[in-house]
Image 1 (spheres, rainbow, N blue to C red):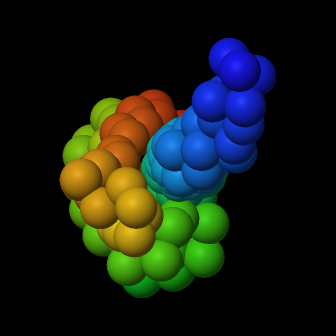
Image 2 (cartoon, rainbow, N blue to C red):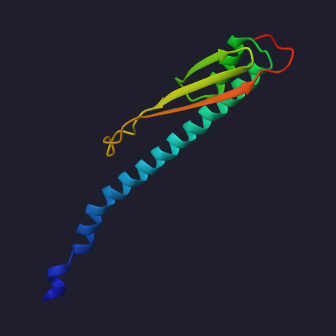
Image 3 (cartoon, helix red, strand yellow):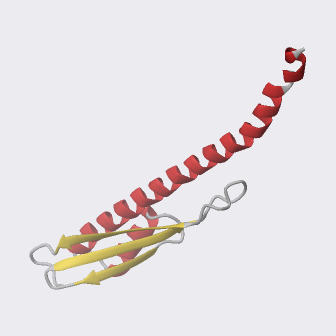
Length: 121
């Protein structure tokens, strides 16, 4: 008698747990996307700082950073007499859907490079 009452329990439990597993998977994928965007901002800032320290044109430095940075990122290049500071910031939208409660994330990085000898600041 007890076995007959438990029939379908596994199916019901699976039906309740499956959406949760999908939501967790989507959330983890979104976290990977945020991590990848952060790595891209670090790379963009570093490459742009090196380029500016070599004396490249500020417009070319920004273009280089924007090619490496995530879509929609902003680049700020501050040229000084002895050092160059490049700041790259970007935004990663939330995943939406089942995990729409996850907010978007702002990623950013700053790189500093010493101006090479013979380059006017």
